[in-house]
Length: 236
View 1 (cartoon, helix red, strand yellow):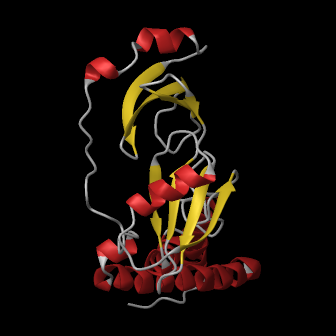
View 2 (tube, one colour):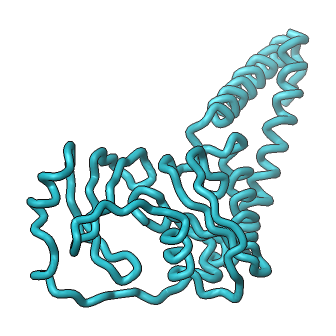
């Protein structure tokens, strides 16, 4: 049983380290500013509502006839203009894989989310002192928003907390704002949920291994206890 005791001790160290990380990250959650930790330091709270005559909009049926495989049509407002958002592939959640087209609801023209339009949307959602210093389209996983599965524009501002605004390229949806405050909170969440490969959740291989280690610690401790009892190491 020597190997059981040896592994038990090493596994207990691993479990203890993670429990300490849980404690420290949990303490941080109790003192952090929730608004800043969510990346809303310079996120505009203004709601941009534009009034337009519905009679001016193209008949949706005319738009649908020009586009194949449309499973859903919605009217959205971007930068003061009405658009039809056509969903060609619609998932359960917005951050899942979706495929959209944007059509100008007044002219019927297909609109691509280019750098200029993404920058304008980012500025509209931003109320800080910074200016845009970089804009890039990211097709793979976003470090700041790992759950986002769709290509998105990252627009970086030169303020004191390095704000980045993310715009989904297909729909124009604001994925979110991120800054140094949120990135620090993300580190705490990573440690707390053992999300060391940054998948944005706790359903990962690290949690499976931690559960296995905890089970092993329990079983090996039970075996060790029985062994000590058989050897008469316990006294009333």
